[in-house]
Length: 350
Image (tube, rainbow, N blue to C red):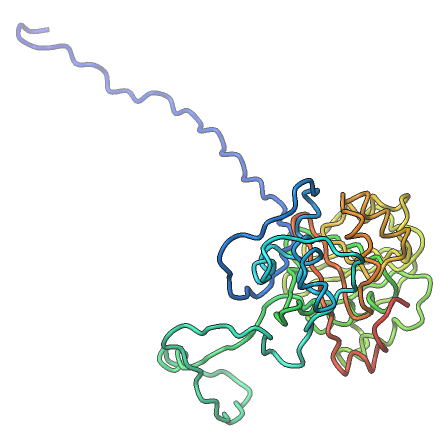
């Protein structure tokens, strides 16, 4: 090395080190969302009596107010709907009354007037000529003229006391489980609306009468409902654009199967007993028709409801369902349409 020169380090690149693979994100199961159109909010929170169980708190504003006693019952079993109550604290009543109140409406107009945003006005509707079959092109300006209207989105359950639609996210990438404590009428109503919703229905039952013609009645097609014996393989693959509702209407519980995406399982419990409590309590959604005293007592003990709530569950009307999830409780008027009553009969637990 000559004088004045500095040593030069070798520019050899270090050996490449493989990067560890990033862990795949864990997708948590989404709890089925019960969606209720929000009524106008009142000032101040709704108080719940001290000493009440947490799972029973959502029922308290509906079951304990003087408004319930004066109007023959009625408020909605949700924290959102509780804000529409005019009474801020629950008061004891001598005897609980059956759920009542305004309930369902024949049209999409809520019983509570909702203030529209300032500057909002509906566009005048006019008839549009039928489009010919084929491909059509439209500019962004033309597409901007389209206007979609609706009061709710999701699987229709019914309406709350204020007349607002109540819907549920019935089909999800993660499978959903439902337990129905009731009878065939409510089970057939769920299947009928699932067919109208675009799903295919698999019925596992040892009493096939009344099921095979449901698809023809709901959709005009006979290939939308498959009636199978309990324990038979389904052989159907569900997808986002072709969800499947598997309904088990048999005394024996369904055989354990691998849950599938976009497939919802409904277990019909004609009687609720402590021996079958785990089936109902492990479900994502629990639907209740009017309960017998022993059924109401068993569910109240399992869900930590008060005795008053248990009495109210025995007074649910024929056209109502109590809807319970892990975090919400609702009373819903199923509001069957004329066509549904023609095909299924009058509401009731039978």
